[in-house]
Image (cartoon, rainbow, N blue to C red):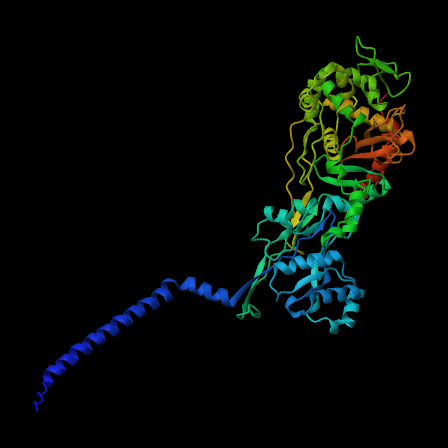
Length: 627
């Protein structure tokens, strides 16, 4: 048997120590690596992993701001937010959605439109979130649901704020309306400001001043579980409400004009010539903007679209009217400024005007003519011959250039979306539109505001306000003041700067003004009864644009009476010696501007007087110039 070797304890101890040291070093290195890794994750990338953790644990829920209110210049409320109730459903708590919707339809009347919108929202939201099914429940609806609530698991009545327009149709076009945000709105709106917001301005002031009215959103930090269900609110930052907006509009003038129209299609605009404040802006017929706030029904929308009077057309902003004789004061002013006429110059009206060398005659208003008339009487009696000759002497190029200075042929720049520019006749316009030359006969009829002429009521009102202000142009505007919140003082909006006067010689302006005074106050004026009993002297001009041939009376859709199938207009400003309001009225059917449109303007001026200091009655005879 082989002898067992003797142990070398020293060598074994040394080996153990070497191995222990290596193992210790390995452990130290491993711990160091782990520590570095912890430092890397918890220090270097702390913010990133903290954000990831919070994203799994904390939900940021946007809070929509309360929309600003809209008032007229006197504090009359035109748009507000009111408390309402809606029916909401939590989809995951409903076993059979189709059966639930059918049952609710039978119980409180859910429409097909409501169901279609609800299904679209359900597809775009998590199943645990409440989805609105029907908006603006009535008290009867709420009572019916309360009685049957035990049958509807996952359904509840929820309070919310909705937009409401207390004046309804009266300010439908001007104030406009808000509606549910759609794809087109998403492209033009800042997504960060509209998180949590369901509605935005669609038309009118609601759209033009969307940025001011909307406000700034707030948010809530909500702790959620693994299923993303809310557990508690960790932090809340309140939204900043939108600013209140005060308009230059005087609702008394607006309402008086609406009533005077008596549902006849047309438009009216009133402007303060001293600063460009729009005092009234009427379009008839109108529509109830409340129908659009929470989604108009297909039935109601179809009825508006198929209405032959086109209630959705904003006639004041986009209506197309042939101005007729309302352009005569502007032509008279241009003729004086160009040196082609003096106030004392006269022309003989025989009832028909002829261009030299042509057989065709252009008739005057009165058969047999008006005799010899000067500038004042040419306006008072609306003598076509005077303006046929003046237009021909001016030529279309000078006529176009002069009328452009009064703002015709382009937008006024008012603070609304969608304004039309109208048509100012010119060689270039006709060449571009029809690719044909301009003829002298077209210049002649352009002199009385017919032919290719097209104006909007706002455009014409701006021109009249400019004339009333001695030829000084001020951009019409609707913003009067803004207010941060209820109780804060409104901050006035700065007035737009004044342009250069059209008149180099103010005596020319006075001559035109005297002619317009004679229209209302002179014995031969076409609107000589319009100013009766009014405390200020009114200057005005009527206009009638013929829309049918005297031998072919086919405009049955306009009026059953042939004599009323004209577009009729009236323009005026007062007090004539120091104008503070300029008004135009355009009706799509009537006998004449003095007969039909002037009474509407008078009603609006009467309403305007309610906000003006009392004045002694003026003598019409003293104000009227000598014939």
